[in-house]
Length: 254
Image (cartoon, rainbow, N blue to C red; front, side, top):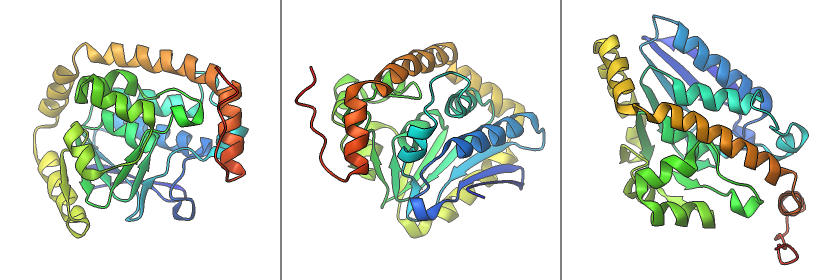
């Protein structure tokens, strides 16, 4: 299965498992992710949720070929079911990040409570280079987290940045050598599930506060703009160039 999920030791463990495509996410995978989060929310035995990938790739983001075949043009699309699920999850959410974390692989981290990354992790928010706009309320959350100018550099230019830079932005809880990541994750999960579950949930709700409604609204606003941009000529040129393995030419557009 390309999305693996299991409950073990009171933790819902969700793993991207498509290594041949660097865990690029398809519409079917988004459905599985959304279902796993809903199951975790409903299961009283689940006290925390972990999302992880492989040593080489957390996720390379959207699978562009599948993305073009199944564009997310409505809020009932699987990707938005996933985004609403991850942004509204009441239980502690932990991310373990190794290798590439591109697009949604970076933006989903804004909704995690604890984010631990290997020192080989690489991040990018390549929305404008694809003729698109930010997703997952990142246009709201990243400026709040990192400050406007530093967020603008990442969201406007879409360039790759390393774990040190991600940590400086406030995106990560901690960066550790790759060989130490798995042990740290298990230790932190064990600590979480040993704590009072209700206290954890209420503390998370209090920290999120009024942002919960604002985040949902921004996801919806971004979705509308994303749909418009996705059908625009810049995105068509960007995707065509990607599939043809050439540099896109945006000079004809204003």
